[in-house]
Amino acid sequence: MELSGKTVLLGLTGGIACYKAAEFARAMIREGATVHVAMTESAQQFITPLTLQALTGNAVFTSSWDSRMANNMPHIDLPRKVDVIAVAPCTANFIAKLAHGICDDLLSTLCQARPAQVPLLVAPAMNVEMWEKPATQRNIQQLIEDGVGIMGPASGFQACGDVGKGRMLEPVELVEEVIAALQPKTMAGKRFLITAGPTFEPIDPVRGITNRSSGKMGYAIARAAWRAGAEVTLVSGPTALAAPYGVKRIDVMSAREMLDAVIASLPGQDVFISVAAVADWRVKQVSDQKIKKVAGQSTPTLEFVENPDILATVAKRPDAPYCVGFAAESENLKAYAEAKRKKKGVPLLVGNIGHETFGKDDNTLILFDANGAFELPHDTKQNLAYKLIDQLAARL
Ligand code: CTP
Image (cartoon, rainbow, N blue to C red; front, top):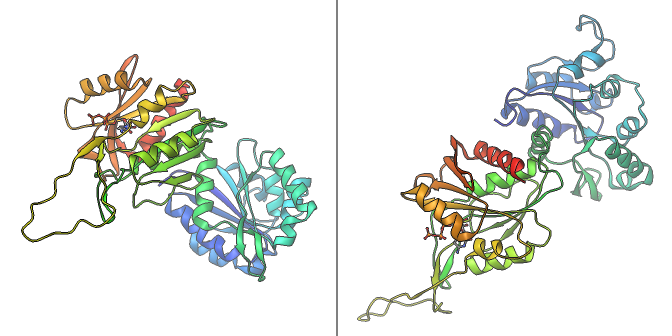
């Protein structure tokens, strides 16, 4: 419920992507938002106010003159009672109006009348030719300069039959953009490199050794860092999770592949968070053929060699970013974690009781730094990730 307690004003302008706006409204409500809708006249050609009223449970506004408002000033009252305005779909015409401050209907007027602290987001949706025209691009640049958030557009198959840029983002992606717009941008301009998940060390082409890490904590941190404004690269071992929205994910299997991906991505990073449960050992002799069971022969014996320590390798480089380690212990967390922080040479180490949290959606974290230990009490992994980002913001 990432939008609990938040009120969103959803604006619809006239494009075929209006059919997706209904799902966008529902998706925000599922995240806990209250949604109010304002529609232009053209939008009502594509979808009715009744549909949006039924989905949001709130009266829909379509005119600058509306006696349902005590003062008959919907353009003033509506933007005052919301946390964010999202115009989706947003036509080339509406973008042009916003760029020039034209107020000739309710939606354009209320965007202009919004209080300074209410962010405005637009989701362009139009034919590729319209999107690429210099006039549209000029207007988009103007909106960026004016601090308007531009959501997308995506490339792909368009309703008109063309293929190219101009498709509205999908409703789930728009929800991610709205959630991010409401987060303080404590990590704006920062670059984060994060590892997550287990590694998989092969025995032969069909077998291997791995561990129970689900990747949830690392993915939650990647998501929180992106929502706080960072550019995020996530180097992930095999997990069942979808890449967090906005995050660049690099998939790897073994510890050595993870190290290579981390080193290749390292230049320019400000923060490295090593959340992955990296296998300490790999099989010395990986068979390039499936090891067969032969009647009468003894069971195979595996010999192991130590894997590189990715975190320690990064931490001792001269160009090391701010490094954060994780320690999954089964007992003696405090003593082991403090020793591990020193051994790995990192300013911050996050401890947790590993086997109790693997695969779960919640956790308790203890932060160890030069000043001692500090607990982030039991919470969802996503909320803990936000708190960890707050802690980092205070330290960077
Ligand atoms: N780590 C790493 N590379 C490894 C092993 C661990 O980068 N080969 C990182 C983990 O991502 C984590 C930290 O080091 O941030 C601590 O991992 P952990 O498995 O708890 O510690 P180990 O060094 O493996 O020590 P031990 O298994 O003996 O507790």
